[in-house]
Length: 138
Ligand code: 9QG
Image (cartoon, rainbow, N blue to C red; front, side, top):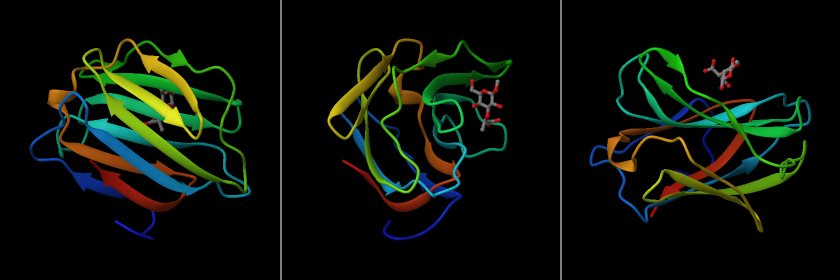
């Protein structure tokens, strides 16, 4: 996917395995508040999220969470915010045994301890205040 905009969906019918790398590049718009990358467990409305990766310019942090049938799990927050309004970004989401590791530019911002296993993922979705440049799965 190159140069399309949000909401964006990439189907992952075979799921992801430990070692899968998802690379998301884009630009944070000047007036952006928040955007998100969701790794969803199905393509259905209201799907559970193995990972909700949510840079918040309005709170100067990145929120990580999961969504189960009963609603949101417990939030984890990264330290600092490696995203800036008006600037490009390059995010790697790497599937690990425990969940997902996020690398933004030169910084590993957190390993999400509570994420669901990568094998359950079926859809990568990007939404919110973001100018998306590319989504690639390796
Ligand atoms: O606020 O926090 C993550 O823990 C919620 C937000 C929600 C998530 C959630 O409202 O926003 O970020 O899908 C949603 O509603 C997202 C965009 C306690």
